[in-house]
Length: 137
Length: 117
Image (cartoon, rainbow over all chains, first blue to last red; front, side):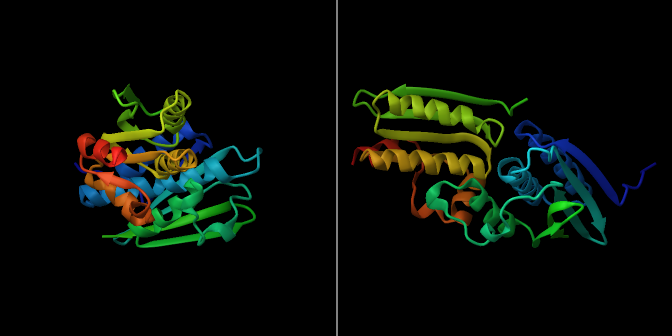
C-alpha cells in the first residue's frame, strides 16, 4: 500500500556548515516524491544549500542558532521555505552580487534564481529572514 | 561532519601546482580546499591548475574559494586555470558569469598549457 506523503515537512537544523548536507538530503528526498527529473532534483538540492549557506555565513546574530527548512507541496508545486529566525543577511545585497570580491553570498543568489521558478526574500519579526523558493512540475 | 572531499596536489617540473579535488565541494569542507591551495601559494607557486574533474557537486562556497584564489594569484602576477569541470559544475560558472574571468579548460593538459602560455 502506498502511503501518501504529508503536504508539509519541517526540519530544524543547527545553523552550522556541517548540517547543510542534511538540508540537501531532505530537499532531494522531497523533490523526488514529486517525480522531478534527476537534474531538477539536483537543482532543488543546490538551491536549498545556497539558502542555508546564506544563513550560515551571513547571519550576524550569535543567538540565532537554527535554520528551519519547510518543504511543502501545493498542487504540483514544491514550495520551500528556509528561515533563520534571525536578522538575516543584508537584504540590500540580494541584487548586487560582487563576484570579483569572492563573495559566496552574492554568488549563491543568482544560482537560486536561476534554478528555481520563484525566489522571494522577506523579513518577518517572528520567523526572521526567510527565503521562499518554488519549483513547478 | 563535513562532506568528504579528497585532495591531491603535485608540483610540476616548472613549478606549476596542480591541485585535484575529488568529491563534493560545499560550505562544510571548502576551508580544507582553501588551506591546501594557500599552502601551495605560500610554497612559492604562482601558476596553478585546479583539477575539478572529480567534483560531482559544488556550490557558491566552492566558487567563492576559486575566486579568492584567482585574486591572490593575480596579485602576484600568477595564473590559474580550472580543468575538467563536469557539465553541472560548468553550468554554475555560466549562471554566475564566472566563466568570463576563469580559464576553464577540458582537462589538466589543456589547463597546464593555458597557465604556461
